[in-house]
Length: 241
Image (cartoon, rainbow, N blue to C red; front, side, top):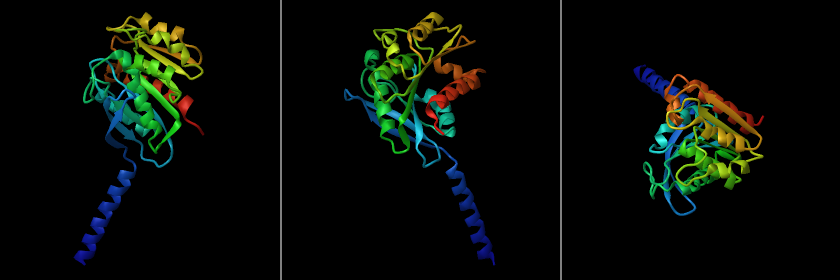
């Protein structure tokens, strides 16, 4: 009798554990390679499904790394997206030198990785970039047809030889969402506004009432508002019935 009770208890625990796993996102470290041969470290967040899902590249700020996206990446995976955060060249765990003018190649490498990931629908890939990552996202979006939508958060129109303002109009007819902080401590609001004004339709603008910059906004009381705005935009253009 005791053996039967023990067996039943073990079976129940295993059953509950397996059911829980089916609803958990998967997080795994991955390695990417850019077109010019730089090895990049990434973290892939996958939703608990076998269906094809949209893929989102997450590009970090200057003097930061892929870990800054962890909370938002998990939210994306829980909403049914596969999210890939990576370290730019010369940052975090990636190789190479921190040459900002070539960092768009890292974004394209991440988009290519998602396009070849079995869970991702290669026709539904977007990039969300913060500050320096937003600059690189714009240029990558202009140069790669794989990228179907771009979101920038507090991205300058130009900086240290990188000129996303010269490329932003080439993203159309794909959509771009330009997000800024109205009292950004690191970026004049006009810089972000220049990207929006130069972009062609379809485009969207949002100025949040904060002095925080880029992914730092996710650590404030505006985190939910920012997250919802980005996910609503992605859903509008990437989710199909």
